[in-house]
Image 1 (cartoon, rainbow, N blue to C red):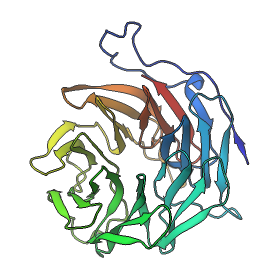
Image 2: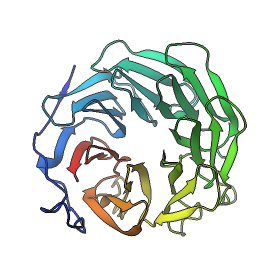
Image 3: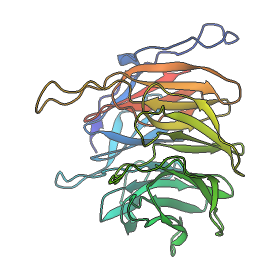
Image 4: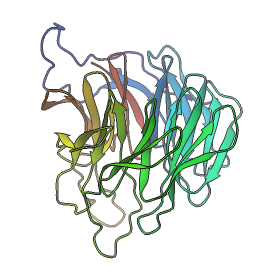
Length: 348
């Protein structure tokens, strides 16, 4: 297994008095905030049992959240081939699961936490979202804007036949689950759910945006989460001029509420008992000429109280295309980088 650069110290993003309100910003992370540096772009992160797992475009890796050991690549692409062109990762601490969103031969896979034999669970077109509970693994397939062939699928973790819970979908990306339903959003701003036990798809929020003429979408929605009977998601209007928003709606549907309005394009969200967190790209400076890539090193990670709202608190700045954050035990984790990535921990 290949080891990654790991640095063991963390900077706290908090005030000295826990009764004080949070500071307005934490600023640019330093070397002391780093958990690991990978050799490929990180696409998604997952947490369990004090370990942080990542899916990147060259493999799957893990590192201890307290940096007590070296980060390791537990699955690696063969012969230098692209490993994951898009997708998400999930873990229960014993196994790690991920969707490799390749087209037309993407896969849903698993590997024991800590490394071992990689198992292909399914081979399917453009799987992107993945989630697990104690019994099943769930995944979404994208379905393009001009070909509504996207699906929501479940399959027992112990093995068995897959069950298609929903079909005929377009531009589906990440998914979220609770004890009852699977939730997803699409690039048209719609939010929907379907019972885990099977049943009728329920539209929680109808489509909010229309597709400009002669446009085919090849991207995916950037994030969705559910907690305490409320669904949260990041919404980016297709017209390219209206502001992006972080929104919420009851799991029963109803009028959506705007939780926050990011300054630029969001890339993913997370929730905990008090806050909604999101990452965003920041200002992108176009390259100066042919062969000069754009500069996108002003991304941020922020949060806002999901009940009280108010002014968002910026937790980290200076990120390059930051991944969706993950949170646990008063710490936030994200990856920054469009080729190689640096994985950060921010103590809150």
